Image 1 (cartoon, rainbow, N blue to C red):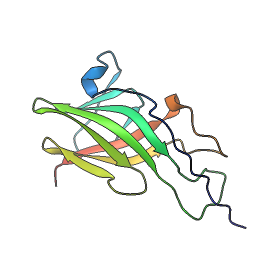
Image 2: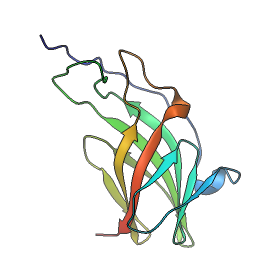
Image 3: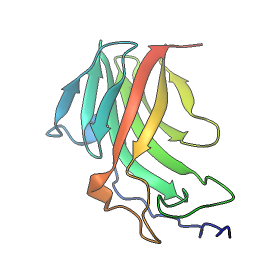
Image 4: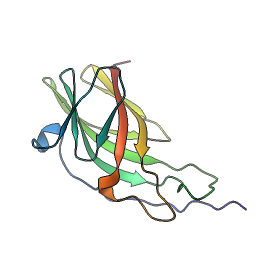
Length: 137
């Protein structure tokens, strides 16, 4: 018997206008074109392109322990910054956009962990995103 996933939405878990909004946030050094992990609130420096994991604004993904008809989606917001300016990119796990361009680079969301379990969303501090900074299409 299949069970439908319950639509779970999540208010903004963290606020901020971009990477420079939290200058004391931990910084991860990452290589251009290579995967890297960011926890909520962390920043990455990828060859002068700064990325900050700002918030998860939606998480309606099918829980790990449930068989669903639809995979659901999670949406995560990332502040990006370079000398040219700042932008906020919202990327999705199971619908477009999964990749977005800003200031000559593209940010791609590879994975967002953890998935919900049962009917409960993960603790906001448990979220970790796997990302790649690539050439702009």
